[in-house]
Length: 250
Image 1 (cartoon, helix red, strand yellow):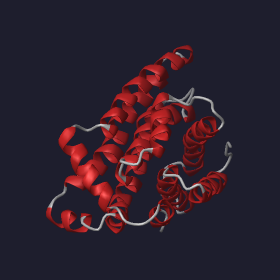
Image 2: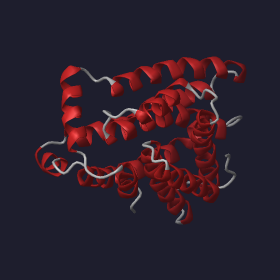
Image 3: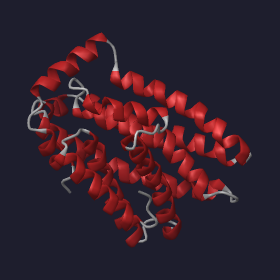
């Protein structure tokens, strides 16, 4: 399951979403969100939003293929990167709320995969030439935060009231998407780009360990937050299938 165009990426994501509706599996949550992000990137490319639109499609494909590879490896009994392994392993965890499942996927894909994809697409070139377009990806992610909040509030009804009174949930999503994508992932991309390719494997392993620590925090955020999440989990409405359908709405 490896794409060569952004349309193929969207097609593969469609397959994963439908597959996980049928199982049903919470692995479909991140796939539904990622499908929406990819469609936004495609629209940006078609509307000349980026400085170099063909390069952006290539980056999108390389980026997506890391997720598709990890998903396929896990499904076939092979081991993907540890940060993805945790995200997939926890798909069967009853007590994780939808937000945690999304954050685990975002953590592995943004904090590890995005930097690798950026370095890959700029191999042999000055990676600084990508910086503006890299930041434009974050603009797209930023636009989706509000949509995700609304979707989560359909799954956990009380969230709508919380959003009106506090920005904490917005900040959680922002920290794991835009801020980390802009800062951590870019810093990691430049590290890879400025290192000999023979060192990449070791650098990726080291990064994966750091990203895995973040995943462990998402899974076990401490007693009080874990207790709050358990309450939220008991109040989440719908089935896995209907939640996936909510998350994939445009």
